[in-house]
Length: 59
Image 1 (cartoon, rainbow, N blue to C red):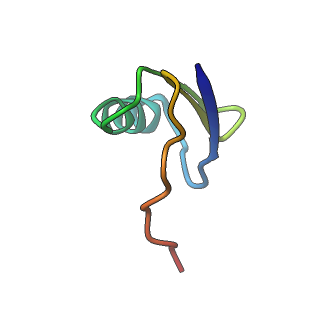
Image 2 (tube, rainbow, N blue to C red):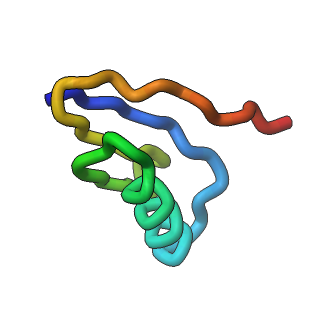
C-alpha cells in the first residue's frame, strides 16, 4: 500500500471536505481517501502503485 499526502489550501468548511473527498475518490488508482479540514490535507492510499501528479499549479 502506498500513502500519498496532499496539502490543500483554501478549504474552509465541511462542504469543501466533502467535495475534495468525492473528487479524489474518482481518481484512478486511489483506494481510500481521508481529507482533514484542520490539517489542510488529504491522505490517499493506493495499492502498490505510486500516484502521478497531473494537477496544474494554481496562481
